Image 1: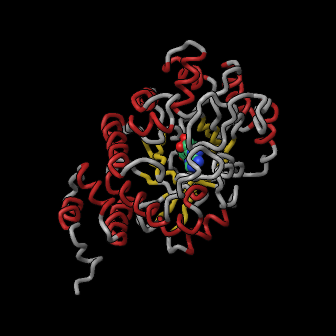
Image 2: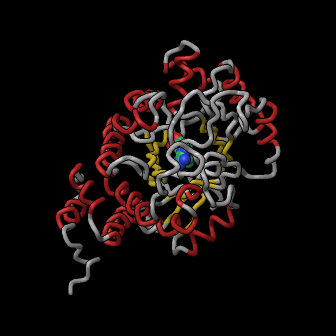
Length: 365
Ligand code: V47
């Protein structure tokens, strides 16, 4: 019998296109999701990963901060948000509390702070600019990756500014890049069901386009494993690819596995490990113009993240340390990992750990 890895049935045409450096189509992407041989798809994705990065696996020394979980949006998948300031478990940190989170880590060689917040209706815009200025004053060299495109759109509407003005004022206050959160699924049928009251796909992408035009690099995510179809996932990837053809500003794509606890979609099962591996692999194969595919270990689970390093992923995110969004949705991963633990898990997976900064410059080698 033929070795299915060497001669993956039905994948011959796709394998040939990849070998010739040709782009995969929407139909190819859907076929990859439907093909029974997960390992064959992983093998193809691994070739693309190794062409770009060899065995290198990137991680960073970062700190996640979520300054408030008060949020006017009612996304069905979210377990973190609280609608009103007085609701049980609703919190909004004072700026001093946020700054203390960074001051407490003075001994850590952090290179990045990643801030994601709820859409709080009552804070002044100065809360965010002062937040950036304060973090910058405490650690002048640190990279500030803060506020999703959804937050930028919300600020523009609430404070009556253009998206560009919001970005300009945040950049002037110290913003270095945008994280990829808020992308969810771009297809309107799904987005309207799971996230009907936040910015739509066109505006999300328009804000990233603007940010790229202003010289910023950004990331982009995809929330999978809920009510979307394989076609929706491929459509999502192709919208990312199309924008990156224009701008080249996306540096990492991050598939985020849906976590069902404590939210309105809690009756759905979490995506399986094989779905997670396949989704990272298909992303690597479809997104020929995005350098990095990140297996966010908090979302995939540590064990699956290790295997994903052979299924197209070359990055794990980082130490993280204060994660709430996944842990309130039932994640059983730790909330933090030391750089030693990250290095060991990469080495144990047979890959080479490389500490990076947010722009993938090598740190400490
Ligand atoms: O936008 C919320 C997702 C995102 C759930 O840019 C959920 O480097 C699963 O975007 N189950 C925030 N996912 C996190 C994020 C991120 C993470 C790591 C790295 C980067 C980066 C960005 O978390 C949200 C949403 O898509 N999310 N609730 C849930 N129940």
